[in-house]
Length: 255
Image (cartoon, rainbow, N blue to C red; front, side, top):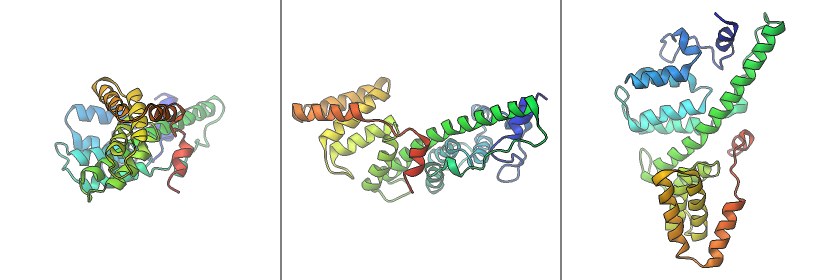
């Protein structure tokens, strides 16, 4: 086996000896766990894909989010369970990159092999950072959806708005639309057409197709209800808005 393949296995975030439930991990899964999970999904083997995601979820927010989706929607072989969905979404939303145990370079390596291991380690960390950034806002969005709809929890617009805001502030366009709608209708937040216009405007820039058109139409509808100076203020807020996209910002938001 090539040294890179050996190091991939050695530098994974978790030991990789077993899934929850005691099933052994196929050797090739260690090198491409997401590919293995996606293939299982294509084959309709959702319980197998779920095992992969549960193995990854201890150190990966996107995997925890995907488990939440499985339980929220239900899959063949995976029963719908809103309580479990909320638990996994919450795990993903509260994921802390700085709490991970960093992989250790094997002491037996030296010279070029050690350098290659260090390069691979850096690549794994960057990949995990990217997945971290993806899973956290998605989990925020879906917790918001559960509170908005009252799925598995008492319906609570205040909490829904809180979670949508968490996701929207980190660039999640779907949550920006939903938060804009809550400002427009005064659900969970004071009715504020300027803020609604701002969020719809931001969402229209981040969405595509029919979703983008719907956000733009909502923005234009709001514009017809407010004064030109208010429209200008909303546009200014949108121009000056910046997403909280850094790992450190996400880490500090729930301390």
